[in-house]
Amino acid sequence: MITRFAGESRFAALCMSTAVCLAYSVMACGTVIVDASTNIPLPKASVFDKKGNLIGICSDVGELPYVARSSYPISIRYMGYATSTVDKPGQDKVFLKEMAYDLPEMTVNSRDHQVLHLTGYVREYSTLSTYTDTVLLFREKTVDFMIPAKNIKNYKGWSLPRVLASRSYYHLTNADGLDSVSNHFNQHFSWSDWVGVFNSRVIPADMRDDTAATHVDYGKYSPSVIWRRTDDNIVLDVDILADRKNREFVPAFSGFVDNRVDCSRFTLKYIFSGVYGHEVFANSLMGMSFNIESNGRGRNLNRHLQTQDPVYINTYAELYITDREYLTVHDAYKREKKPPHSEEIGINPPPEAPELQPAILSLVERVDNFDYDTPRLDKQPDRRLGTASKFATDKPDGLFKRLFKVFKHERKRQ
Image (cartoon, rainbow, N blue to C red):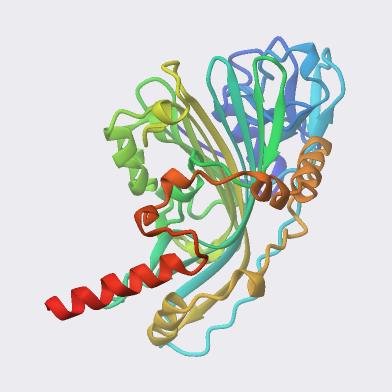
């Protein structure tokens, strides 16, 4: 299906978005998430409960999924729009206001500067759950990417996020209502490190010269790739599961799918600005978001959690580009081999990142104020686990003397 609308108004483009999400062919009967200025439904917005858990995704027509009354107030997140809070059920519409984005300035000094270096801020929410236990992860990261031009043959760079600085906040709860917080968990169960950016993508021919247009490629049962253009801004929505060829957007993730990680949802959204010509390039990327729901994560999670119950993993993340510059290949190599220290670069949310929910702010405060040293110091070590216990003596320095004698004896034998 291809729909086109030529015109200079933003309203025309959003009307085409309505056609894409079938808002007029399938009437929603519940609460609908809409654009505040045009009243047009917004598909697949993310829904968070009062504790900061991601609990659902809106439908293709913008309809809110079922939410228990005990989960309110809920927050509605949609990349490119300010977060909206819904205090109680029963509203006909929830209005989201579009946010203005400004790409950081970029200067190219010469033709030798052909490697694009992007720095970004990532905010992610991941949930690991079994029938009895739940682990909520809120994480902030500073990441970077190194994207060489197509004609660069001697430098590959990286398109997956390289973590420069990170802060993690875990909230653990069980079926008995007990909870705990920490800045560390033994298993890595978020998907955010496996989704990156692409160098370039060809714009569909039928929408290159229009100021407002929409292009839809269908999979077997649902829209697979949706392009929406308004002037020099382009939004690209991709449903990875709708068509096998969409794995091109996440090549690093394909191995997990092939290894029987059962994904029930995998959607991507890219926002570009300042797009001219027949392609979108990484240098015009403003931000992206993605949502992955999966059953199991591998890495022996069931054994680690000591349960045979299914393990469900849900990750929602947003990336905001905070800096971009072109480098020479030589400088790119230097940045790759010697990244900045985490303390030096820090983690700085950009102005367009929405305010954190009260529940997440409370989690951050609990984790930051937790006394990690006292429990460790109070714990008595198990002497049976000592690797050199057979050398121990009653004297404090006995162990070192015996080790030194063994070392001298081995040297003589050699």
